[in-house]
Amino acid sequence: MQVFSDAMPFFKGNLHCHTTVSDGARSPAEAIALYRSMGYDFLAITDHRKTTVPQSRLEAGMLVLSGIELDYLLSSEVVHLVGFGMTENVESRIRYEQGPQAGAACIRACGGRVIAAHPHWSLNTAATLMAIRGVTAAEVFNSMSFARPDSSHILDVMAARGAMLPFVASDDTHAYAGEQGMACTMVQAEALTPEAILEAMDAGRFYASQGPRIEQITLADGMFTVRCSPAAHIYFHTNLPWTPGRIVNGADLTEASYQTLPARGECFVRCQVIDAAGKSAWSNPLPLGTV
Image (cartoon, rainbow, N blue to C red; front, side):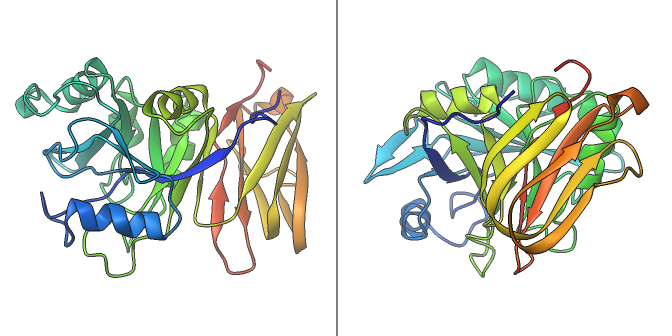
């Protein structure tokens, strides 16, 4: 199995940011111009409880996706759901008192996709996230969640229990004080259109990054191989606490492999590529035993 196509381009995007329409420091026009200047191909403006961009559009070479962030306060955690790519009016249909599952279903019914935002910052449990159906991906890294930006631990717990959410990385930009441009989701799509981006997300042709590139991932005869931009470390993560060959260190690594062990109960595998500056890229978890 090969995750990515050899014939399609990658597009760089940020699927979570805020503007002056809710609690962000820059206007929608300023945010769009800023991300365009940083080399992003697409951007979802996801203001809190507001649909700032009613319909996705191509603007001066950048795809601007419709978006919204729904927020729910539970007894010991919060749930924030980012919706993007909607083709119908979500804002008028949401009933917050019905809870996060109803919110996710509403986004999907309006043609959009759902991201579980900053699970670690939100103190989400595996049980809470696993109960929400229709989620497309979760933020493995969120630049704005300064003290708790990395959610890989809770997502690995979920994957070990059979709920393998793919990974995105987002800025969640509010203050525009350095968090912008720190993360992205790289999506391999046939074209820079809303339909092609959503199709690629549904198909799993994307990865999360702070800068390093993942060029190809293959899983064949139990061997998981990643090809990437030059890296200092490549880690392979699974549900087993320890197995040999999980850590590869070196200078300018561009490929590494890991022999999976489904016979020992390994049920998923993913990789983390870390460059010399300490920046990471994360692949989506892949299930084992059925490939």
